[in-house]
Each structure stands twice: as structure tokens, then as C-alpha cells.
Image 1 (cartoon, one colour):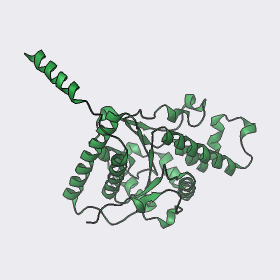
Image 2 (image 1 turned 120 degrees about the vertical axis):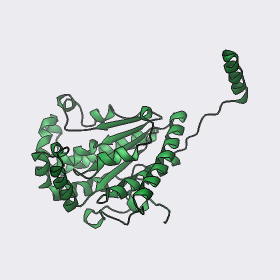
Image 3 (image 1 turned 60 degrees about the horizontal axis):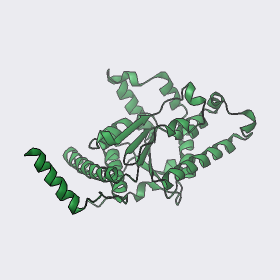
Image 4 (image 1 turned 180 degrees about the vertical axis):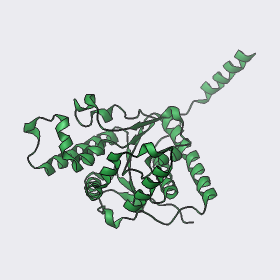
Length: 292
């Protein structure tokens, strides 16, 4: 099996992302279930080691953003990929519709509150990108944000361009302060999503996850695809690229994500602090003395 390369999935503004021309399924990176689990476990061990080094170094934090249509596999991928990560150094935040308190602040405010500390990994299950995705598909929701009328551009497209710029500046600021961001868009086919939604209805334990509003959103599929395409092309940068993950095969999806995360975490210029030999000798003597 060939060595893994993240290049086919990476978009950093060199090549434009085109939703309809980007595959939702690729050749599997695993032979069978045993091979899949062995690879994922090995990557988890490497990721844990890289996280330990990052935590000891205390220079970098690491933010992972997941965006996708419903049933694309965000939750299952987060559970499996981060299975081996030390939970005390891991922070996960899932974002729903903004609450009243959130709407009293700027659109990025609630996301600032959940950023990881140095030495930690943070995961956003949906994110500030909803502010240029869901709101773009449903611009009437902007009324809830109480933006002064004189500051709202007459041309709504101008507002989205402004927000793209705000997001890029926000991410550049974090990058320059030692918080690189990896952004995953889980790219799933509409028919595959439909199969998964039907499967939910066949599973008593998962029926609650499907609401009438979820099905209503499917009617805007083409609008969302255009919104994702424009958003990725406007916010993909060299420092904080997007990774578009073929997601019709959930197992392959998880393996691709795990490979990318391991590659990026291991590439961080972090190291375990060294303790001088004199200190180690003194500490060893102290421990033996305490136990005598």
C-alpha cells in the first residue's frame, strides 16, 4: 500500500475547490476491518505521543474544525479518531444555533470562549463557519443578530465577503500566536446522506436524531453546496488550509482524517523539556531518602 499523502485533500487557495468535481468516495486506504483498526490504533498512539510533546512544550495549541451536512459522520469520526487522546488535554465544543446571550455579542464571540489552551487540542463540531453557511442559505436569520442597520451593506454579497475577511484575519491571528487550525469539510453525496437518514429511521435508538427541520434543510442542498464552495475558496490559506474529506465511506473517512491530524501534529516544532543531570541526580536521591 502506498504511503499516505494529504495533498489530494488539501485546499490552500492554489487550486479552487469545486464541489461537483470533488469525489465523495476514493479508493480505500485499508484492506479489511482488522487492517483498518490496526492503522487507526497505530495513528492514535502516534497522535498521543505528539500531543504529549505539545503539552509538555506548552508553546502551541491546536484547533480542529469539523464542518459538514447532517449525517456526514462528524460525531463518529471525532469519537474514533481522538480515541487515544488524553482527555485532560482535549477540549470539544459543539455549536448549535446561537442563544440570546450569544446574539448580544459579535458573531465570533462565542467561539473565542471555547478555544484550546497552549498544549491542548481543541475540536469544534460545527463552528463560526455556520455564520457564512447556514446564514447565507437563510439570510433572514441575520435579523436576530441586531447588527446596526447602517452597518449592513445594501448588497448582501458584500456582507459575506466582509465575514470571510473577518474569519481569515481571526485564523491568521491565532496562527501567529501559536494556534494553527486544521479545517475538515466532510464531503458526502446527497444520495448517501439519504440512505443514512433512512437508516436512522430504522433504528429506534437513533430516530430522535432526525427532526422535521433536518429534512427541511435537505431542500436547500444545492444552496449549501454553493455556500461551501464559496466559503472554502474564500478562507483556504497556506497557514490554515481546508481538507475536503471524501465521506461516503465512513471508515475511509476516519482513516484519512487520522492520517492528516497525525501528520500535522508531528510536524509541530515541539519538544520535551530537558532536565539537567544534576537536578535528576538530586531528585533521585531525594526519592530514595523519602522511601528509606
